[in-house]
Amino acid sequence: MIGLGTRLGGALLLILTSAIATQAQQLPPDYLVQYSIREVAGDPNSPIAWTVTLELTALERQGDDIRWHVHQADIREIGTHTTWRLVDPRVDTASGDWWVQHVDADTPAAGDFIVPPETSGCAADVAQLEDDLDFSFVGSEQATTVPILTYSFHVESEPQPRKEGEDEEIDPAQSKPSDGGAQ
Image 1: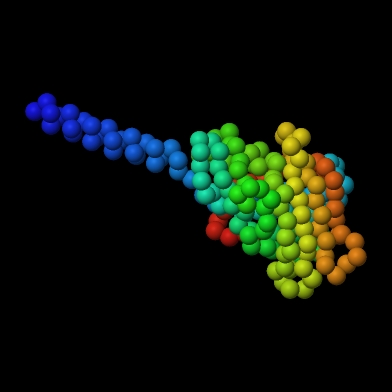
Image 2 (image 1 turned 180 degrees about the vertical axis):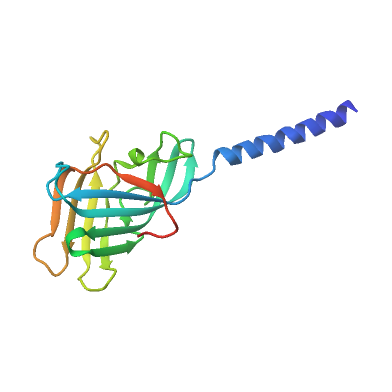
């Protein structure tokens, strides 16, 4: 009887250990992260001129670090009501994804996403009324509580970028679980 009880106890221990490991590595749902760029950088009274919305999918988890894939980037110029979209934009990291260290990986928060990696591409206007938009942006490692971005938004048919900024403090990132598609 002791031998059977030991085997049973060992099997039970193995099952419980496996269940705990699976639960601990559970991935969060897809997330939308949005950055708002004002007409006058750092002025909270200045109107928002552009938004950049990233749709993120969690691929891997190591403790509180999650590897996010940038599934889609939407760049919106508020004054023109134009939205450019690019699926799978170029993310300049070794893996092509964004590793984020979360305070609590079970509940990612906006503050976890303040330093986006360099992301770029050529996005098409969703309504097909404007020419394509060449874009790039990257967060600054100096950011502590709000994002600091260097960015450029350039419509291909225009000689100058429509908006660009270097090391500009922008509005705090906003994030929420995705409802299944970027807006």
